[in-house]
Image: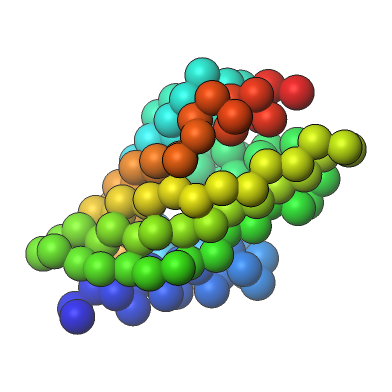
Length: 128
């Protein structure tokens, strides 16, 4: 299990809000693929751009965005993790499962792809 500790560091940093630890888990040129058809969809490049995205999502969800790992597995330089994520804003709430796919390079996350179990519901929430 050569790379699963990278995912654990990522989830722990997200949960604690430790931005320094989160920055340390990404390569400087990380690529983040945010799916869907909402205000945050698209590809981000570099830690500054990814942090800007995560900060905007946290702000839009009144700081409630949470990602919990259910399981993680690896295949070479890839880690696939089943997750449960939730967020709320006013009376709106979203909670669903997803799969996050990470490509690891030099013991850091180099690329991220996210998949939601109900992309249209996620789009609706982020477009509120």
